[in-house]
Length: 135
Image 1 (cartoon, rainbow, N blue to C red):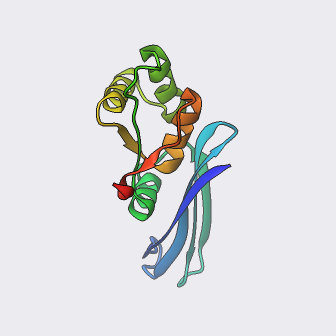
Image 2: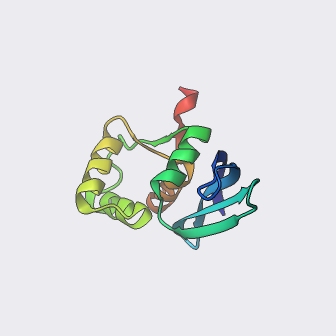
Image 3: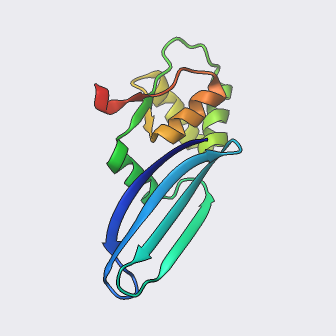
């Protein structure tokens, strides 16, 4: 299983006390999934949410903690339709979003979380993504 997690702290929506939790992005059964667990120190409310896809709040926490990863395709080894399908299947992109991602991937590279880019790379049989922090 491929996963990345980021710990966060924010005010509780119910009482305003510190609420800590974990934002997780993972690949499970070949699909991009997310989990968010939180616990309030004040009112003791705990929650566990899970779903499919990549909500912005989860993605933002992961990117802030771990940085972005880049996939680049410069040799033309993957046909356009296959590339579009990979972005649509892995990340749920519309056709327009997939076209933009494919263009970026062929030029300077497409950036996302490690989990997202590893899922796309796996669908295309490409090398793993490269951290943008290493550059």
